[in-house]
Amino acid sequence: MRFEIMRLDDVNGTAVDSTVVDASAVNEAVQQAAALGQRIYIRPAD
Image (tube, rainbow, N blue to C red; front, side):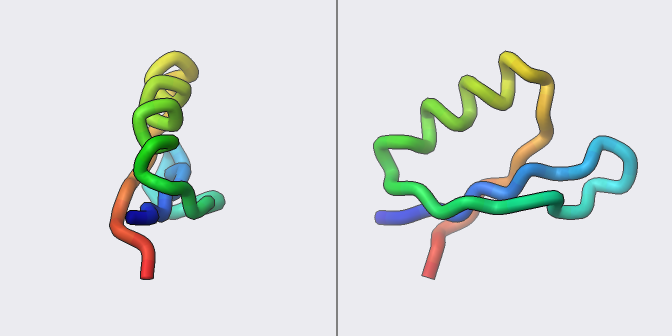
């Protein structure tokens, strides 16, 4: 399964950029965002 991960703007919460990854890479993306203090939104990709 593939997921779209969107990095969100800290001020207004709009999507700044997005990337599509496979399920095995989601955990890494979450850990990286947590370490950097980034807000992200994850949803299944089409």
